[in-house]
Length: 283
Image 1: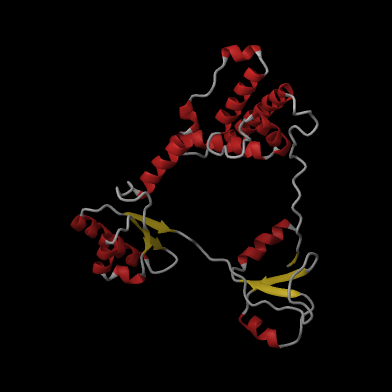
Image 2: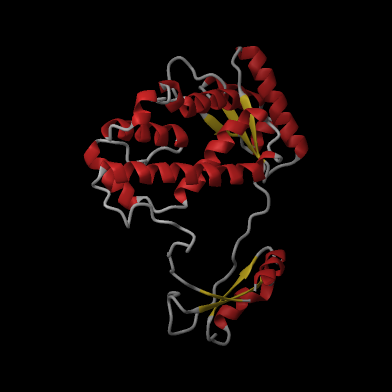
């Protein structure tokens, strides 16, 4: 399979630029542009969220999923002109609103309504301050659920990846916890299920003896996809735009070809041959 390299970094045609055709020095134009943006983000975000909703099994994640859908909808649009126009008015440039998309848009709109003397400003419904820290609250909550309570003497948790010896050396595991580990990681790319079970047994035993809780993380990395030996034409050292790369299945004899006859194009191989069958579907 031949792959052609490209350094194209253009945006898709669906991206819309808000504010490029308006005189955004006018607060009235800014207000109408933001109101249009809010309506677009709300409708596009809701459409995306509706596609996700049936697949979300934990109901406590629904509000975060909706916010993520709205954030993705916001980032589909080029906001650079709008962001620059908001700065002279001392308003949020919408640059860091990942955790609170709609509250930030509503807050900026509410302030612009006051500046413009809009009648709707008399019935102002500015988002409460709690809305702006909801993302921080959820992050703290989920961090504690995953890693446990933070120790009183520090804000961070310490995670230690257990070596193979942890399955047979209980004292090592106990010392790891005594030295401050709050959670341990078992790399499932190594060892066996029996070894993992013994590691966990050692952790639970050490918990009881030390009175210190310790979370266990199972890292299900899966198959590692790698490229093999690289064969390059004699007159080239780098791959440039427009060059072709021949990607094949890794075979033991490929490495020996490096000292054999020269090649015309760059060649390498994939350690998981099934990947090539999948790539063939996208021709």
